[in-house]
Length: 581
Image (tube, rainbow, N blue to C red):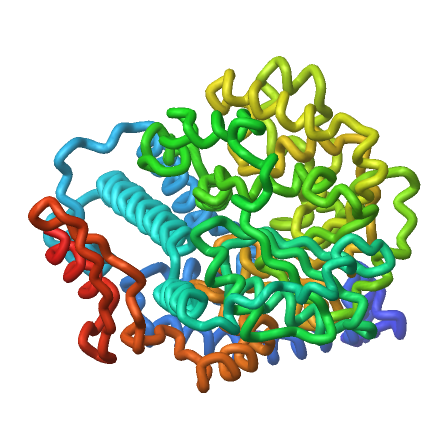
């Protein structure tokens, strides 16, 4: 028998040698897998099987009881490789969200005892085996409690800051008393300001006239000194300082003992203006004596305040507006500038919380184009806190009179450094408009605005404002610590508007040097050394005159206080109180 295999491997032939067996052919089906494919398959398995073996061994070492080998392998290799998706984590998150929504809709039980810390919360959950809902409920109660405490702390901080900003620092109080004593005992402190031969300059329009209304002696000295030091022509500067009756003696003594030659300084008290009386200006008398006004500025600042719907930022703005200075006659004087200085054509009015860093003589060359007030607008700028003010920030537009006459989107402007064209002003009814809106706000029980003295001025000067370049007047150094230092250095005038005045302990330390650089020289020359942040008031001090009623006779007693007898003025005042009784 013979076996024949065809070369194509498609047939097999079997035959016998003796012819008894017939020729048989067996056909074989054609192959579909090539040797090359088989080789590649074996090669891949050779690489893959060891890898699978290693992973299986790792899973076994970690613990086969935790999951099946296939599940653990799928976790190691990933859901995409094995075609399975592990959504247990997503289900857990969804369940947790569902629990949070349920807890958020429920009321927190009264009298629930809350842990003081997160560690106590975790320990309590372990010991009592609370479920997830109870955990979420207690967590919510803890967060709400902390939020209330933080808000109360923040409002308390703002309230204390308000009182600190409204009070008179001990150092300023001592300075005023000492200068008042100098005025009464030192002839040089009472010399005429300015000297008689310079009186015509006070009404000479070829000079640059600045007006400053303040009862803060130290702040006034900073404004005057910084203006003189920054001026290219200080001999052209004339300062008109207006103060109240109680500060007049000390203010006069300061500038009499500390001349700023070649500049000229005039100091006048409100009581020295014959026409500026409360009888002639009845609206100011009404403002100061109105019961609602006095309660608003001097009463309980938290009474009637809905703190739950008030943000700390809004509350700070309201407190700033409730400073008692806003009902002071000094704060309203700027509206009477044409009458105060009838012979002047143009003046620059300055607040006492500014520092001048550049020559301001160019302000007199600015063409106001028939407007009265050259001011920096406060609706255009990068600072969202200071330079984003429109009328809506100052007025209550739910009041029908406000909504009828004012536009909420109208741009506001700032006091602090303003150029006033007094000739144009005298042709307008600005003062009458100011008085009208003050009266209307009093009639409405302060429901039209509650933000100081700027709102009535915004209305009175409406249509009379000429915007000037913001580089002339930079605001906000008393509001926030994030002031751009480089921008402040370049500004002509920097303004510490806000509660954090540089002469207060609550002032921002890194912004105070702009102000203090002009204070030390004057104080050193007056008293021999610069004062500390809290100077001692126990100096040689001839107490003026104390009338004591004793045995129905007025006895005139003069005291000479020896240094260090009293450790503070509080002790001294207590002593006087006891002495009077």
